Length: 422
Image (cartoon, rainbow, N blue to C red; front, side, top):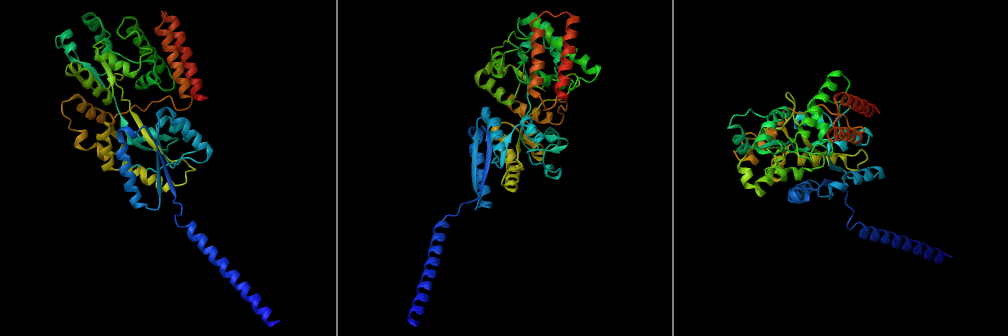
């Protein structure tokens, strides 16, 4: 009996040791390469101009977080909104996403973005931060900006006006010169893509129109539409001004088919490379606006979804990409403007050579200090733009008497007000 008991104890002990050994062996194998936490970062079409820049910063980030795997996905611009929305709704979004303010604001309105404190935004230009607020909450970190300037053919203007023409700063200034330009060149004075996306809405915002709530806004609307209608019907604008895209505008300018064009630095570079004679004959000045208006800006930003897994890492990486050193590198690499306020005080954005591409950088940077604040809002934005564009098209393509024009504008006013309130 005693032998049997000893045998059972030995068998039990051997089994326990075997199980323990198997458990240790199994865990040793499974944990030989334990899975790293994954930080996921999405950008919009940055690989071509800035791939090396992003990869270098990922390497810097990984040195501080060797236990973190970083996954960078560069998305085509056409897919950005669809893929972002799908990822957020699935509950498995990236930790950090590069978007534009319009779409970012829509996400903020749905309550699915993290907010940032005022203190966290101290390094950025305050006018850009104001573009990233919803109900006074900051929903994004600014990344980079663009601010177009006005390019004009100085050689043709000198010929038509014998060197005696005023500084052109507003659409009204172009309108004043348009008749003489037409008589001199038989060309439109300015090439505009009036009906593309939100172009016309942005022009109206420059005239302090944003809600049609008072008689002053309605009177200004009447003035602006009447001015562009007159320019269109008299040939001061190209006949395809309602259908032309931005690249085609630049091609028209390069062919000397218009004297003025509003363009970003990337398109100015296109003129330099493809029409050197026109480039040499050109000069630039501030972006066209209303007589007492402010300037437009294009802005890209970073957002952090509320259900992101690595919010602290997302903030850290966004702040890394937008620190002083990296903002200057990125601006030089991509020919854009930094969002970092200290970088904008660098001589690179204050003291520019006479070359048009270089000068456009300094003019664009200075324009960030005086940005348009008016906006039709982010809600129903596409419907508002469609309504504005449709009405403008109806007026330009038809002979509309003054009394019928007022009725059309009243109808437009009511439609836009309803869309804003909806």
